[in-house]
Length: 355
Ligand code: NAD
Image (cartoon, rainbow, N blue to C red; front, top):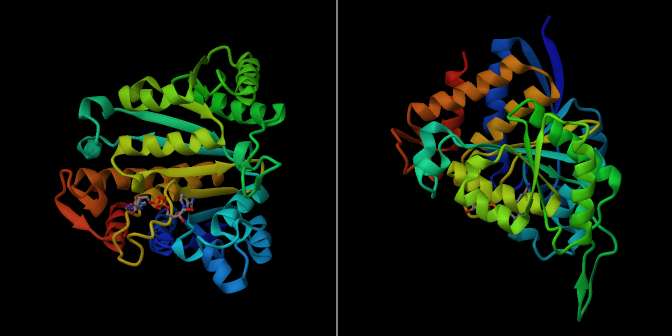
């Protein structure tokens, strides 16, 4: 009998609705091929939620996500809401959603497809074969630390990590490394920040439980440089919230476009699956966004949240095959393209490759 999963859908703002539509097309196709049913529950977050309800993270969404097996999310934000008070801005809604769901581990694979080695701004020999997993702590650190305040003549935020927070994210990184090349590079700023020295000390403690995994440490400024200089040296990068945010955007350019990179945010409960990019207001409404990051996020959802490995790898395979056959959206259109697609056409192409 076909299995049924309840999937929360948050389209969000800007290109969010466009890219999520394509991911749903692909999920429906893979569902029909693999005998899986998806029941979608649409929910509001960010600017769309502000317009409809006055707040960026409505109670209905809070209750809704708890009742799902997994949540697929596009992106939020845009200039329309930029001048609102901080707690009412779309971004505050997303942070509150992540905190509510307890999704402390953000997994951001940065993989360079062989077909797109020319799409990177770096030399092909530098990026060919890159396969990094960035494990970013998502619901702690400076984005959430208290106290925080904007004042007239000075302002401040607080970067704080507890032993429990560092331990649980470090364990995620080591477990993932065990299934990969068994190398973890923990990125911090321990030469300057006490909180980073603490992070490093706790990671060293956790590493004792994983003697097979080689642990190294790197300062974040050096890590930014090394990602560009020699990205192939990395297997798993373990890092905190703000450093992970910045480094994973940098890592995205190894692959050629931010529109290619998916992410999974997991914790003890329901997981959140989303592209790493934002709502791209500059191209919203034009139908030209690259939907592959969101389609890949749906594949990660099948794998990590639902354990549907076959369905997940069918999507990954379809993406690789489409790229190999020269299908490109505009952001990667200058590189070995045979057919330039808009957002919807790329969704159709991926659907057609799922057998
Ligand atoms: P962005 O990621 O939205 O866009 C950066 C650049 O990448 C833009 O030129 C954009 O056109 C391009 N781009 C992004 N996704 C693309 C895709 N799928 N296909 C083709 N090109 C793509 O970052 P930004 O411009 O700094 O932020 C815009 C808004 O998004 C802001 O309101 C910001 O707060 C919000 N944001 C949201 C999230 C999220 O929802 N998770 C993450 C980052 C930023």
